[in-house]
Length: 324
Image 1 (cartoon, rainbow, N blue to C red):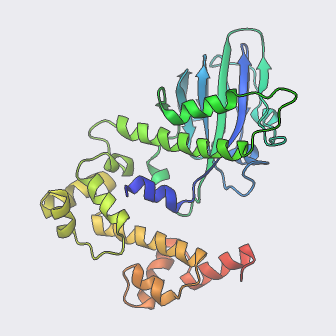
Image 2 (spheres, one colour):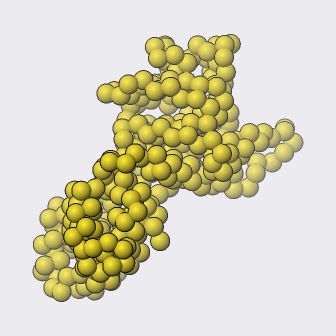
Image 3 (spheres, one colour):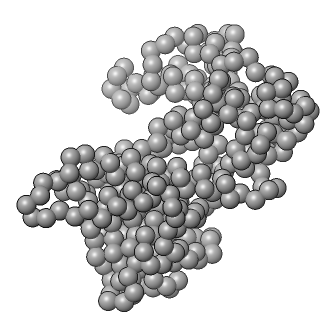
């Protein structure tokens, strides 16, 4: 299992397609926090990522602190932190609230939206990707403020476009599972955007995503994520990936800003936090799986990473969900 897949599994990725829009110039929409967009789709999401997939035409995207980005057909813009932004047919255009165009699905169908003037047409699909941000590092820390990726030829993007292109006649019933299908396709587009971003990272870049694309560090990450409970040492990892111990340690630290075993320790603690939330296993068993011989050492490390002892972490989570 590769490291990106394991992280996406750990953060409980869920998606929702929320807008199927046909814009005519002149047009502009302003999006505030993605929490407003999530109402009716992912109400429990904590500031989900939002992305816009341009299927025909082109538009401009603006976000604070980022140069205006021109998006063409087949490209997607992903804002991983759900920040406020604007879309329009020009860098400066009069805007309406994007949230006002987003309507909850009716009878299992996402109704198309037409907005703007009679000029050049642009078709945009907007979707959300929610993840548990308590476990989302190092992924979120490695993503740019606005990620632009070319998804031309990507099956997930084509399937999403085709799914929304199907319209019902007055006598047809809604397609069974239509909204669920759109949700899964939104997740796949989110993953594909990140995959293509990783493939486009130039040599010399650093960060977790750059590490995924490195021949040696990427293999080491895959091993640690696939078998986190194994008794890994830098020497064992180095033998597996085909480097010397010192070369792997240097290369790993250069890209991820921490040594391999430090990274592994942090990942084990994230997995332990998940087990505390989602299982009834004993604290001692979870501590052992995280690589700690004593519950005391585990509790100390866990509090340092998550701000509270594991017992309180579990108790508050159960109280929140009503299972305790």
